[in-house]
Length: 566
Image 1 (cartoon, rainbow, N blue to C red):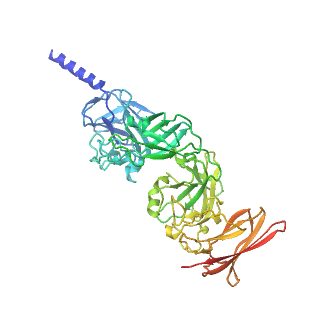
Image 2: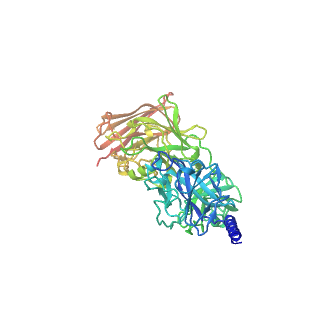
Image 3: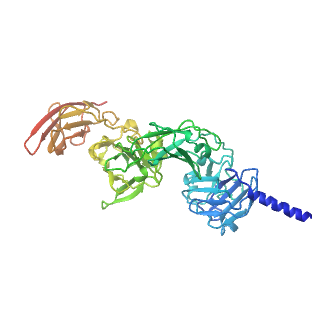
């Protein structure tokens, strides 16, 4: 009779465990092994580790592990409170000394990053991890053989700040307490990072960490500008819940900029959003030629530095930079080394900058940079040689939006060493040619990544047919009046210009332009150097401009300028 009662009790306990409905975060994914090679000491097989952080034993029958494209069904196994189990492929299970569950169709773990999620028998998300190779925090270990370990299992929803590479000599701790385990409380509120229009009636919000899914799905927690108000509905997007979809009551037009504000939403630890709770959004359009321009180029960095390219949206349109590509030309002149700027959607608004580089941290350390939010780190940049080359921006159709055929000789002639000196665009609206680029100012640290150029020229309306700006200039590369702009406004096309510079005694010191075919409106530039690229003394100089056309019309202009020296 006792045996019958014991068997009945065990069956009842087993049924009870199987029938339980786990709460979110009762069981967490606390260790990952996406890149087993080269092996440091662990079996050369991918695995994940589960930890039960609740006070309840769970039978994992009918639980699922998935990455969205493949799903593994976990067989019967009772995971006791405060205990671990390894989940891996069936062939790998015997390789691990600790308890391991072998499953069919184990999800492949991408080396650079992936989304993994654990589902309960009720198909609810128990835990999800959107990991990245950046989480290692160690350039050597991210190359393989080391696991990613969660630091504080009581803080399972804060993302990168709660993970790092294992410090165990074998490369990881499958089936045992994590080597990096420590108290790491989550006191940081979520932030609204980006927003974009998926279409004219649906807005996607991207947050810095997973949200409480109920708060994230409350439509009244969001307000949109321009009279839209709260959306018709809000949906926290599984499995990570760090994105929210807002469905609007009406459609929005393309290229109009709106703002969305989030309130009363928090993370799984109850930290409510406060600052950084608003983001711009809009419905983007395709980019045409010269809508976006190459605004700054660093092609010859200092030792240990990296190249960068800065873009500027000079149009009134909104663009999605996941539809843009960066490229160069090979030695036969063919467009090559094409790199997509971003896989995920991100909006590029009128008047904004975007800074592209392989290492944002190095650029931010070496230069006084602008908003770090405009920096985009690419896995690989096209090659930009130190002497000369091509920087090309392509749209999604493969058409050239802008191209700069740069040359090291474009730099200010009196800079003896151009390493680490960026070339800056002078005028957003002028052609992408030598006359429209200048070395970044010394006072700006020879580069202004992510912010307005030190050599930027503000468009100025002027009277008369030829004028100069400024009337006193000092070509010392300090970012203030470093060159003279000679602006012209001719009555028709087809005029040819000759421009010469004379000193106060009438002696020619520079033949600036010879038979230069000019448009109806434009400008030329004088850098204060003489005909042999020598530094001229300070003093008064005469800019003599002569124009003529094929019909025999001609005119002459004289402008006086002061060249100043410190």
